[in-house]
Image (cartoon, rainbow over all chains, first blue to last red):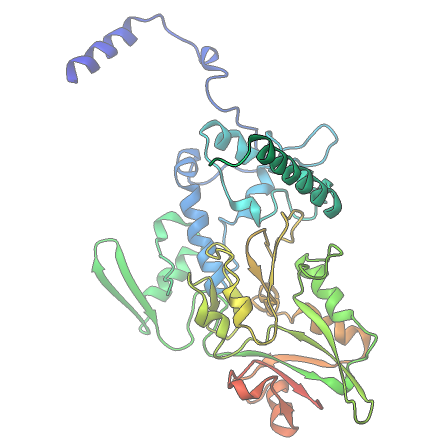
Amino acid sequence: MLRALVFLGLLLALAAPVSAQDFAGLGPEIPKATGDPHPEGNRVMRRRHMEMMRHDRDMTMHDGEREIDASISECFECHSVKDEAGGYVTYESEKHFCRACHDFVAVKVDCFMCHRSTPEGFEEPALHAMGSSAEQDIDLARTYLEGLAGEHTESGRPE
Amino acid sequence: MKIPSLKPATTRVDAGRRDFLKSGASAVTLTIASGVTLMAFGGSEAEGAADAGKRWGLLIDVNKCAQDCTACVSACQHENGWKGRGTPETDAQWIRKVTLKNHATGHETSMPVMCQHCEKPPCVNVCPTGASFKRKDGIVLVDKHICIGCRYCMMACPFKARSFVHEPTNNQSVNAPRGQGTVESCTLCVHRVDKGEIPACVEACDATGNGAMIFGDLKDPESEISKRLAEYPSVALRPDLDLNPGVRYAKL
């Protein structure tokens, strides 16, 4: 194992020096933020942002502590991405700040099932899945079920 | 029972105040093992606004509630970002107007009904995950981070106060996150109460001039709500269940 590591190290050392540009496209493209940088530094935020939000969510929910910094709504004061139309993108968009990294590492976050994914006051557009009416949903389900029933009669019941 | 972990290293919040509270004479800290700490705070001293020395309640004067007025319902919808989708069977309903008719006399009574914030809430008793809980100050809430959407609490509630979110949500209020697959109900506008304000329904009722709703601390004998309760008769809904709700009705 150690020998392999030494070998790998040598290999890397011998390889031609690479510039930062060579790595472009290999990692997630993190949208630029506005506002002051995190006092803890980005390293801490990258590693621990989920712990901070989880910790503070319990305090808010159960103890009524409202004066917290690490709240999900505060993230969007600096980390919101605008679309071509000048509005903010929601979590439905691949350009959303959270998705930039989370898509890259294939981690699905549940936060935005309940929380809004844009700054307060912005009128989010209707969800794509919500475009259909209840009748359309029922029609879709009926078509699907009829299709299943058709398959069933064609193949016949196995004896 | 959920004990929120307290790890000051991971937060930058008001560290000075927390240290002061931790070092206070009334705070007891017990270290069981490294990394596991039990903390108990004496009296009503708490970090957040939830105060065990208070119990928030509502007094609704049914006589003053106008039958055609739905100001409280609209205010709640606006404040907490819930609205109907035209499917009454499944639509969210944090607060609704109920009309009672006395068949003998024909007299009709109209009043708002919402979560009654029981002292002994059946929804909390039946919750399998601990998502349905009562805050120290008597406000009954759903922690949607823990709710699995089993809807047992909806069956247990004698007031039909809770709703289930059937559809994906967006454009939620920052104050009231709500999402598909979780149960929700009146929060007594806990985000306002924590700031020292009154619930949106009470504010709206006052604005109409009806003044049918009073919000206040039931444990404080000097509060307006306590004085009214002491002076005039009032009832709890379903008193037979002995739930001691925080919402009381007068002239019903």
